[in-house]
Image 1: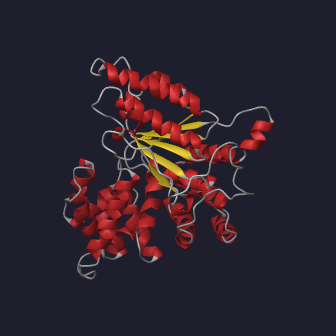
Image 2: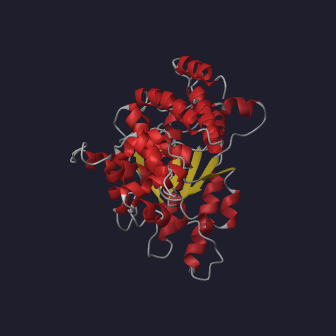
Image 3: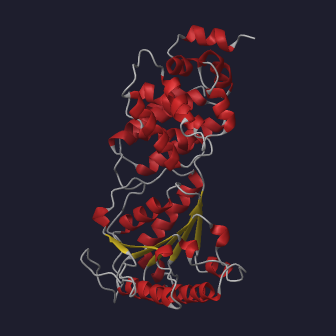
Length: 392
């Protein structure tokens, strides 16, 4: 890009105005540059964006509130931490956990732009529910979030509730299942009756444990009756508050369940651009060094969830504390960490990392790593990198 220095200057100034929406648009530009193969320019913008991310890492929102949280729903009581939750009458086990908004300290996961756009739109709808009703419409009462484990589904649900200023009634539905005939449906009814009494966000984790397909020949009649009870309770809850359901196994859900959720959000595993940002958030190093390390961690983590990548980056940080940095280059530690997590890492990646360091340079350069990045990661000069990647 001919005038890219001007672009970086504009971004640097604009980010100083603390606009979360601007952050989102800059990230979209980074993604586009990566997709076009402009890794150097993408890295420059990522560096600016990461500098601000580090200073506001615990900021709760990408979306700036323009006013107060939505008004409380008429006729509902306010939930408090001391409020007694319903329990299973046979085991006395609680059916849910209450999480107050002030107890939610989380950062919204990094999602691809289309997912983030849908999240922003849904939150805007929920935060302006009164305006929607004045227009003769109804705000979306429910959200179904599905995707692989570790992609940020639970974090997203808690973050949305925190943005709304609502307490969470969190229920793991696999914990509601009982071996006693009729007890599961009774527990389900008690849970919904409790949530419908209070102004809260009901989060149904492990949703597939109860919402399974009713014509599954492997299921007994009891679970079919439970699904019917669930459908009835979801219908009754409309207008009583927001419901968010989370599942790792969307293929198991009964077709009628899908129709109860106006918004259905698939959360994919992070693409390369998101993995780079996730790794940068997880590293604690100088910005220039962290960028090269983040690039290699993101490349190693192809196909991993965001949670798995954070675990990988944390393991890397811990191991770097106990090595002689002058004797062991970053690439060697990352290769060691990847090998210790080999069950989750692609065999094509591992086959490169298990080569002699001098033989890793050419395939990594072909994968898009610059001479400067490889020089830092392998603790050699850029001239050495250039010579080795051009060798036959």
